[in-house]
Image 1 (cartoon, helix red, strand yellow):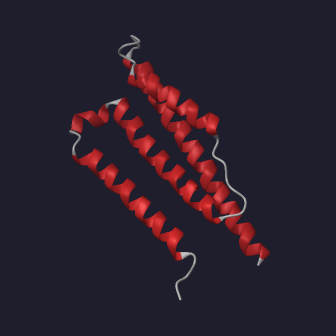
Image 2 (cartoon, rainbow, N blue to C red):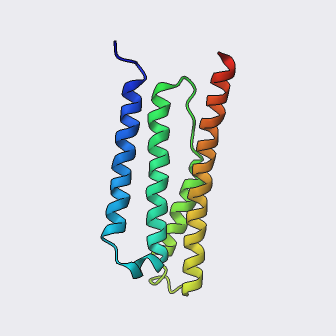
Image 3 (cartoon, helix red, strand yellow):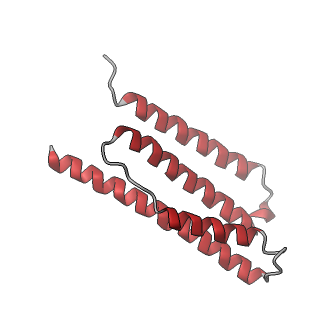
Length: 130
């Protein structure tokens, strides 16, 4: 008989493969000089953040208590990323644009770390409760 955990695990694996493929396409079709751009760093961080949020959505389907992402931190990252993206239009110097991109990547990273920490915490609670 099929394991009830196999379907959510299969969805997680398929979603992870899709996001890895998307990241590979970004890396393959981007020239080397573009990776010195803050925009490229923000795009790669946004793909990583999307991977964590997709994992969060798939895990919340199978659990009683849902984990909630820090929405304000994600909005902050999006705001800083968009400001870095339109830095030329806003007439910001390159150092400020790089700093904004770094703050955007940092906020996505902290948000992802908070979500992954809550996953680990729930897993520890589940193993202690058994």
